Length: 357
Image (cartoon, rainbow, N blue to C red; front, side, top):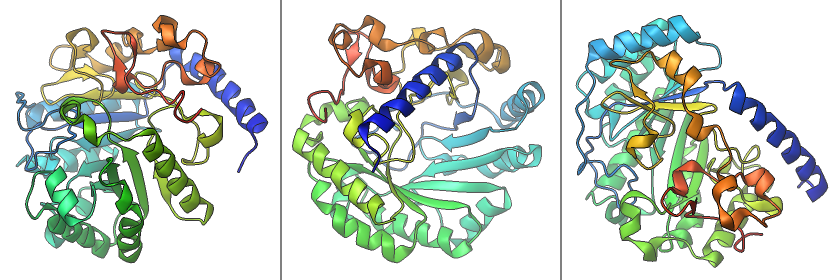
């Protein structure tokens, strides 16, 4: 455990580094939302998949886009992050990803794994998938109720077992979205995942966005957050590969304790996304607002958009937040994550001041 002075020294250097990224951003994570279709109906879905529809890009349009990215920006330090909806619902999924692999892209995927068996796992390996994160959001009944999918837990566990059995991937990760109801299941979930020999477990809180806004009673309480971060920190102290997500500045006590490095919202700095209809945005979790769309790959060259736009994201949110004015941590928080920013009230929807620090 690092002392506070060491952490503040690191955080000051990171703040300087972030200022450099605002003028010279470095694309590292390029998210492709292949579809908004989904075979589950999750309570917490930020994109409201299933109820929100979008015209999907064609195979030829993805081919053209991927060629342009490689030609204009190269492949070094870049990762394609494939998501949805459920990406495997696209009938041309393997055609898209095989072409990306042929071009030399590294790629990983987020999936509910309910459509994965041994055959699909082998196909994923053949077209170059390196990593995958599978959603398991509680024990069987909790998971199925949370995702409103009967039998979803068993299918997801079976999918994970197929991925592990294939033995071809750099990392098979499980991501768990924790709620006020499911937080008491962390110890039992750990035993299940430990027996399965997954590579890492990413534990995150339910965020107040998308459908989750309809379920305020499921959001974590102050006591729940402390329980969550103590659990992750204690796991990590014993050498277990458990981590919190990238979201949110956690204050001097928990920063660097529950994930490998310090908080940094990378939207528009390291991260850009292509929505199912081709819109160019920052992070897919950010509220879908017309003024945040930077262009569309059907009529804009992505590299030019990345270079010349994204100004909304290359700044400090704390500059326009009255609640941030007297906060001693604002130099490290910057107003927190764009995906949990209230663009109407101009303040974060989730701030850990007065919760953790």
